Length: 429
Ligand code: ACO
Image (cartoon, rainbow, N blue to C red; front, side):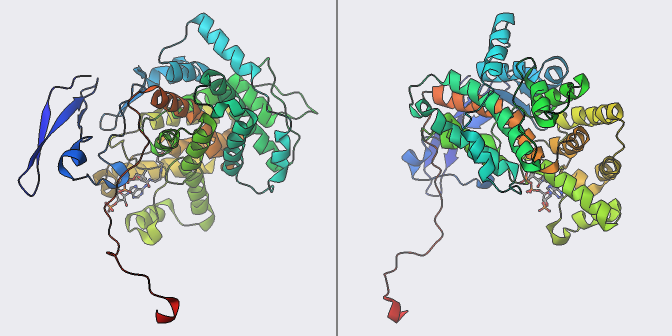
């Protein structure tokens, strides 16, 4: 990382402030304003952090204009095709692809830590059956810090907590689903690998044999890989922000899960299906729906379209569209929602509204249709996203904790409220 150029900022009083320019590995340029307030009294204002880098990071590179996404330098297309989720998790967290021994040890540890404390089963029973699973899993992840109190010690060896979390979130997610449909919890099976075990816990029942379909297992692997990291998005920034206060790993990740829940972020996959179902049920044509989007009727948005960073195409959406066709063909599923989605995409990509605003399908446009085909209910879609994003959140939390330059996250503000005024007793108001 070079630090050689300089920018100059001239303030209204004519004072000039020199600001170092930071250049990243891929020639991204940033003006370092860390000393701006100390030297000038000014702060910067950047609502939504559209132009603000919050950290230097060596985990993920993405170029929204070119549609590039790489984890630790490896293109997402190669990882989705050739790797699997466990290996990608290792890569994100440890910065390198594991050798055979490391891969085996990592997998074995994940297998060994898949059970959750039996007492935690009572928590599932305490939630109403209508609970959204994101509420359940975030609460469960927070609870893990109560079962592993050494995680509160800042000098603890985090590697065991990382293993536990990666393994147990999968169990927690499947248990939350089983509980919501009133089926018995299926314990993890050590003979299965990570994604196969997840499918087993989700779809097996004690009264029948369940065989994991290799095609479905591959699809889950790919879906999780595609979601595994996306640099400083809303939930990852939340994990870093919460973790910067010294909060433990479980607490920081639980906060990330909650940030992911919103429909403008990870909740979009659920929102896409609800939108498609709404179009189908209401009987309006998808073309009319797109007209409503364009005229901003009732603030309608085409969910699954648009991205803060990708302004050309989302490379994950390309892979997902292909996967969607393959999975549905394999399962022999004919989903009318897929037809609506494809038709809308085709029309939107030729429409000036979407072209001029650089709105393209994002990762969530097709993922929901694949989840539906796999038999995963709509309210579990964002849980699937959380499961995929987990190694990314962990990698960022770890990078932040290990970075000696980390400071507690604490943005400034421009105050726009009243100037000082004095307390008036209630009878005089
Ligand atoms: N449908 C219709 N119009 C849209 C859409 C959309 N999906 N997205 C953005 N626009 C329009 C906005 O109305 C706005 O128009 P204007 O300039 O006339 O006011 C313009 O495009 C810019 O939109 P912003 O909301 O300012 O763009 P921003 O970068 O802040 O938002 C976001 C990005 C939140 C993803 C947005 O595109 C959106 O709401 N998409 C739908 C939700 C979605 O799919 N989210 C998942 C994102 S991927 C992820 O988090 C995993």
